Length: 254
Image (cartoon, rainbow, N blue to C red; front, side):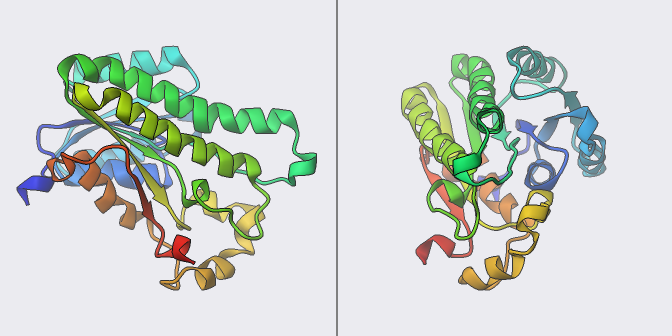
């Protein structure tokens, strides 16, 4: 459908080397966009993502860097504009997760997670908005989590949960600040999804519980995050900004 067609759009995806970020990057290309894939070279996967994009007949650009670096992000956005064209879509997916009891959680661990999950999302939005706002066109999609709205039973992750809540409210704040300047900002909050992050040792024993506690009786596949991303990136959502689209199989209803 034309409403969901991203032909001619230029997208920038952080954390595009694996999991949800990788699948969304490829999904945007499937919808017609050319895609820049940003992430840590040491973590791998970016070339694989780019190869999948070019196999679809779309242009791909691999960009190495970290979302905690203003210089890396500014350089990456500049390279996108030079090599692919005017940036119109951004998906800020890069994030980390871990668990520890709150009473013994080291401050350093708290700060490192916030540096990536909160500071990194803000710096990414800032770099992207600086080129989108003058053109009065753009869609920024930040990946949070249902953990920003609820507290996961059995998981000691006060730092992670609160970081995702920060992303949700930050995104709403940015959406309102930029709403009359042509730039939309929205959030996708996945529920339990089969990604490398949810194969971490500290949550491995919880998978059956995750499935049991989800009304649809299973975890999501990364493929199921593509539709929401394409919707929020496309003209189909032209009057949508400041929302938190929870994609969780009904989990938060319980």
